[in-house]
Image (cartoon, rainbow, N blue to C red; front, side, top):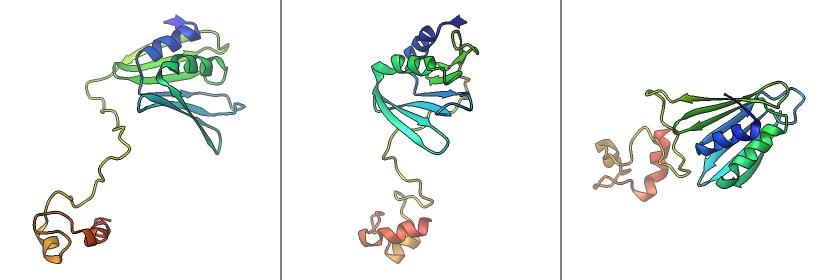
Length: 160
């Protein structure tokens, strides 16, 4: 559907996307790509140049304004917003004055979104929760199946 930039930004931001990727910048642009990621109720904006990344944080209620500003800057020709209901795609024409908006529904086999936790549990080869008889004999695990405090470094070394 054909819309102006502000209307397209409003539709995409109303879906509360977890990630937005702005791309297709001309070679002369200062930034090649821009991403908006939802982190803890706020959006983290990353603008990527050839060799550097510049970061900024905005409140969730400022998303529509920030997205419209980025699209109106005549830098990016495409925006992909990933939300729970599907992928919202905004494509701008060569004059940057008209936007084509599409909603691509999620397929039933779509992968689940990545975990947003910053302190997730390590994925060791040998599980910390499962007592291993050989490691109990070596003294790395205690009799009740926990890792012995002085042997924690050895457990991590074994898991490498």
